[in-house]
Image (cartoon, rainbow, N blue to C red; front, side):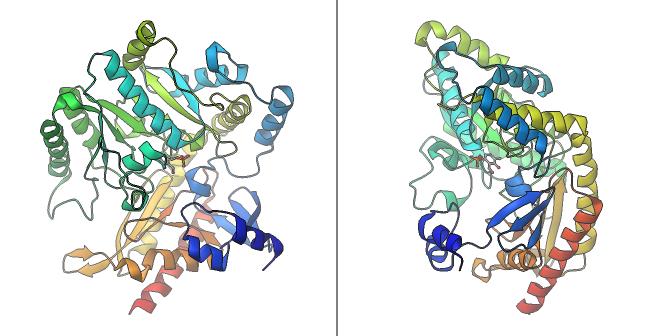
Length: 456
Ligand code: PLP
């Protein structure tokens, strides 16, 4: 083991990693450099990154233009804050640019540094809004099973994955969850889209009524769920859910941390999924991961209440040292220039169609392929045991998804085993080529075949 591996093994507390295993075995891979869709590790081995890091490196690695923007801004103004009405030029320009792309009705941007803090900010905005409306009891937030909203105390509770709650005393008591619209595990046999959607909307309505509409403040949802399994909702799902929310005066928060800035082939996932959110969270694609930046987009309906509320509370008592950081804003502006000049949103839609079709074709004949699904440049293949006309989950101890991912990694392709089942995800940079998609698909198909053979 090299010295650096040893340093990592001994001193770094890794996120979402098994502490004991890491302490014994050290890093799976030590990334050293990257270009386009390719990572090179410390031993010189190259990997095709079919996940764009964590769904974020949308314009690909190694963009000189973003590196220059970061360096230029750091030289000119390395830092200044936004408290007490202080401002910097890059943040103001970026805010206008984000609003110009957002769905109608959005008018303000609150910057942060991560998707998790954006969703925490959302909860505080929603509570503040209802306190200002003299509805202090209207505070509960409904999220969905399998939804991923981050890891801070509020966001981890909103996340509907047990692994983020266990051992942390979460979720907080004002959080509720409804079912995910998952074809394999939630849709009843023979249920068409209309019936499935109606049942999901009824479940939401029943929960709000049972809790008391005067206690429910907001519903948060990703347009397409990412980490929970790349779950694409059935036709008409969001309009039906929205009717329920409107009926009970419940705000809709779109968590666009993955979908925002083009991944579904539209600027925002809300555009593609027919959502009309009151609030949106974005992160990842705003800088393509070159710098940590998130934003909460606030619609006029909520903003007008907050603005008038200045009279009651004075300063809005929330904000981070790094809110509206000028260096990260400069990275975002350079990133968005690339996205626009290279027409990458359209490209994400086109390459996504190709990737989804390729995955469907390649995995159709593997007996453990329960479903291949996706939208734009987000896709998953879920593996399960055939069980009559339906499917049964593998015992998690068999580690089917993780074994496939490990075998693919050995063959030089990075994809991701998602929690809660055996789904493997794909979310490459928007610059991915047909040949790179072919390579990712064939490598993972080979890995899945090997694992399938070993299971028999
Ligand atoms: N929301 C969604 C939809 C995400 O996918 C993520 C991260 O993957 C987050 C929120 C949390 O973002 P972060 O990891 O930047 O805190």
